[in-house]
Length: 444
Image (tube, rainbow, N blue to C red; front, top):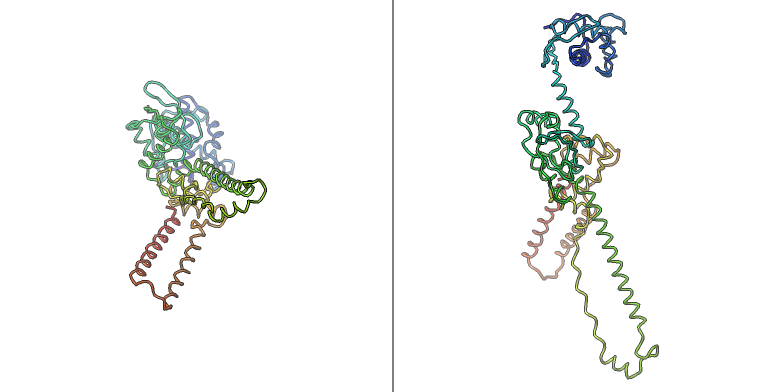
């Protein structure tokens, strides 16, 4: 254990020892580095705490405040010299230690000094993680014996990025075993396998490619089904993915369908009006003159038959044309229309903190995400159950009360079995309404 020559009452001593001193000396490749250069770089290499760290060290050692940073550098150099990893005077410091990963004991702490290879891998992983989030930069990877730069397809960004722990496990696996599953390309971009692409780049491992030739809808299904089977997504993450993949198209289709229905209804109304006007203005048998008495007698005795009644129109499901129903069906019903509607109303794009919590898996349900988003946006929480539900339930209760009152009348006409049957149906249906309302509020 190395005893320190000065008091080090700062938590960031590893940042100074690794980033401000050891790494620049190692990166010099055996060339001498003056101590003054190390001191000049402390602000950029240590970060925003460099100044306060220096003040804390100076104060703890009864030294001028401006001398704090130089005192920390001096202590770091002393620790490295003690390990025989450093040679040369202060104006020509040379790293002579091994290039491997090292550890050094400072007081009661063990500080790791990563090798150049470790740092390159860490830098590549950090860059790869940024690219996985969809900044559009290409990643150069080996495909067979040739290098190819690949970017991520926008459809792949519908799924949340893996957690840091998941990315690290994937990196370790690919670094040890290579990329065992191919990357799927669509329109020349990676549709499935963006994390494998990123970690293959970080681990400098080759990849294999396969081309996906389906439609856009097929590509959406591939993204969703492949990740749903491979990853453990929360209810909120799944709903968010379906919303990203299908909501925009579903809303466009719903608008088109609504416009088509409105046009058809208008044409039907105009057609009926034209027919009425034509009937009212139709010329009589003798022009504008009234019918002769003999003709009136014939019409009275043999009136024209009434036109046939039009066939009843099939009842239309009022929910079928809604965008949330269209999107839910497109995704195979894995997310309910109510959950998609509530997620849309939550407007997560205006609640970045809530969005991050959903992507990380902290907020697991749509209801939780909607409530958190409303709080972040400073608006009342969304109520997912339509107002008409309570209206219809109130009407049903009124009718049941009337049925109860009818029992006091003396009129007969039914028996107990029919009453029991109807009440049993009401109880079953009421339970189904309650269960569906609970599921809707849970965002499932």
